[in-house]
Length: 337
Image (cartoon, rainbow, N blue to C red):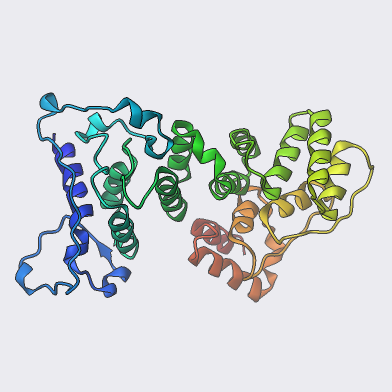
C-alpha cells in the first residue's frame, strides 16, 4: 500500500512539475522530489502558467474499473507501451490519454535537467513504463516509445531496455536502441548475449553496423553459408567496407591471412581487429571511445608494460573519472606498479 501511494505521488509530481518553476541551478545537485519544503510561499513561481490535466487514480484497488475500447486496441496510434501491469501500481490504462502530449514532453525535458536520487528515479521508471495508452494529442505511440527508449539509454539501464524489448517488439525497429544493447554486451566481452540481442532486430531495419555484426554472429554460430549469403545481400544493397570485407573473408575461411591493422573508430571494428590479430597490442589514450575502454578491461587486454608512460596512466585515470573504466581497475594497476 505504501509503495502504491508513493507511485501515485510520483505520478502527481509528473503532472504538476511545470508549475513549480524550478531554477536551472538545481540541475547540478541531487534532488529528492518527495522532500517537503518548509516555506513554499518563498519559492519563485514561473510567470508562465502551464496546466496539465492529471489522470484520476483510484485509491481503492477493489473499486478500480478499467474500460477498454476494442477499436482503440486495434489502432496502431493507441498501442500499449510499457512493461508493468497498471493494476500492480493502482494505475489505469488511460493514465496518459487525457493529457496533452506536448505538456508531457515539456515536463520530461525539465525532469531530465535534474539529478534525481536513485529512489526517485526508480519510481519515475515505474510510472513511465507502466502499460498505458499514449496521449490522444501531440504524442503518438511511436514517439512516446522513442522518448522512453532514449531515457533508458541515457541512464544506461540496458537490462530494463531488454525488458521493454521483450514486451514491445517495436523496440526492435529502433536502430539506436538495438545498437546500444549490442555495444553494451560487446564491451562486456559477452558476445553470446550480444548475438542473442541481434536476433531481435526487426527485418525492417537497415543499419550497416548492426547488419555487419549479424553476419559475424552467423559465423560465430557456425552458420557460414548463411553468413556469406547475408553478406552478399549487404553488398548488393550498397555496402562498401574494405576493412570488414578483409576480416569477414578471413573468418569465413575464404582467405588464409588478414591485415593486422587495428581500427578503433568504433567498438565493432575494434573487436574485429582484436580477434583477427595474432599479436594484438593496443594502448588507449584520452580520445579512445568509452566502449573500447570497457572492452579492454572486460577482455583482460590491459598490460602492465603500458604503464611505464606517465601519459598512459593519466589516460586511464581520466577514463575512470568519466566512468569509461572501472576505478577499482585503476587501483589494481597502482598495486602492480
